[in-house]
Image (cartoon, rainbow, N blue to C red; front, side, top):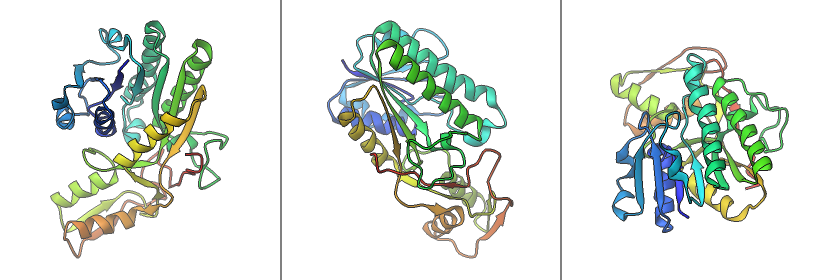
Length: 285
């Protein structure tokens, strides 16, 4: 009755595996290593509680790994919101179709509990900020967000049709060790290449909420231990936000730089599908 973590070599997934291993759980990790790294499990693999399977959810041969599992933590996904507008097909395949395959494998293997990592972007440009879980209408403005909302709907349908139970977590921007994308990662790498100038997408006024990855995992496990409805939806974020220029200032200072020229690309969003203002209500959590 151990756990299966898809995408367990990724940024958030590897931290979740660490936390589950510390709780004494046996964990089977399924990851195709397209964006994750086996090195992210360096702390957990020596415990002997982790088994790693390099497999693709859109391929075959992994379904039997779910047999006897107490829960599936489905984190495997294409995480790049910006690229989803330029190349939508991989996002649909790796998010929606892969989730459908996980659900069907769970049904066939009689696994009843699913944890799914969704996103704050399912709310679109919400008129209510901080945005609660019961906000409507949900109008995603990116292909990535649309794929995640479609996954949520499919999971709800499987829960009510086949007697499953699910925990859906809508994340703010999660940051921290092992991250390999996002605005902080982008700024650090740009400044290492050119410490005199920094390109900032949009006008720098986009304001969003951020949360450290270990706190995110702690919140997931907290909710899963306590919420026992058939279909449980929770925002995970912080109670404050910061704009992009403010993040740039922090990164510049942390790197010990001065006199950096900021070059703004213009517009009120960084790319097509970018939500300029996001702050989640975490009252339910």
